[in-house]
Amino acid sequence: MIFVFDLDGTICFKGQPLNFEICEALDVCLQHGHEIIFASARPIRDLLPVLPKKYRQFRMVGGNGAFTYNDEKISVHTFALEMVEEIIQIIEEYKLTYLIDSDWNYSYTGDVQHPIYRNLDPEKRATNMELGQLKKITKCLLFTADDLIKKKLECLHLEVCEHGQEGLLDISPLGIHKMEGLRRLGILPGEFVAFGNDQNDLELFKNAKYSVCVGDHPIKSHANLVVEIEGVSTAIRKMSDSYKNCFVNS
Image (cartoon, rainbow, N blue to C red):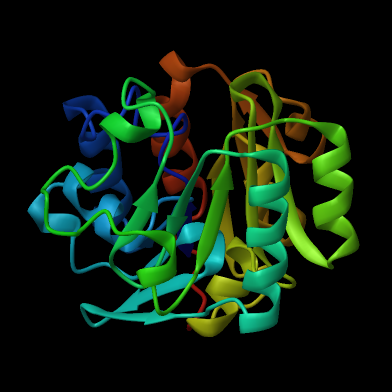
């Protein structure tokens, strides 16, 4: 079976690398013959540093589906140029701060004390560039939860994920989400078990054979099982054991 794990808030906490208990549970999963895929809102650039080196060759989905990582090579889906122009117009009209990712570099204008900035490019391998210097745009994070702005973005036929408690709007091209990233890796609905904790895991939960929600988020209504953070490693072990004789060719 394929096990798909979101990172932040699911198996990775407060921006720190995976802890020993989680890694032990993932190792049990591997010992039972399962494949592990990480599917995160982080671009691959920021996803790899929180993983132990032994997991860094695994297949991954980053940027909520904008990036895929396979055989240690990154593939990327970008916004159309005209859509970038529309987004920039909204940014300028409402004087919004943002994190906008390219295929590797990024443009950040938000608060440097924000947790997102502290988790940004931890290995300092990319460059914070002026927005106009980015040749490709893969993902936009706007530091606002304004409902009017959200509606304007949705009218542009974009994927808009609201993180209300954090005051963020997470934007991807239409049809780009974690499940689409899995499809580009050749993984189909019903072929995986999903662990997640937030709105950007919704498509995973809808398409998973079995889904586990970590914490008390409204997305739990789409999950088969809800666990607290303290119970994540136990849930991984139990699911791994439950599916150890169930294999899907990907």
